[in-house]
Image (cartoon, rainbow, N blue to C red; front, side, top):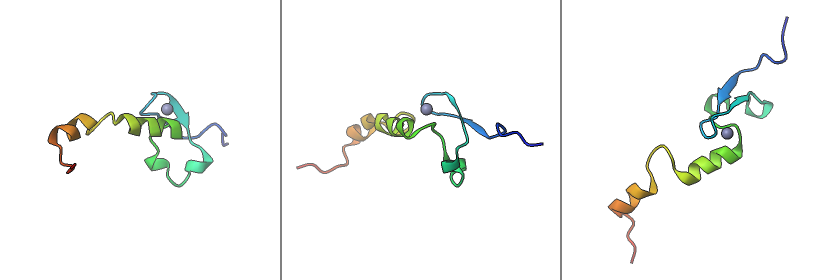
Amino acid sequence: MRKKSDLPQKTCLHCGLPFTWRKKWEKVWDEVKYCSDRCRSERKRHGAGQGTAEDGAHHGTGGKP
Ligand SMILES: [Zn+2]
């Protein structure tokens, strides 16, 4: 007996909502951390989690003229 709803689930690291396995993720499911591309890109843009823009600005390693 197999249930169609018996799919793996994860919780989105950005919005915190649970999402279900999708066909398009079948090869990358282990790496999927966000429920959508939108959540993934927003997470990147804000740089929340590790290495904020603040950190980079402080050190000023980029050689600006
Ligand atoms: Zn999300």
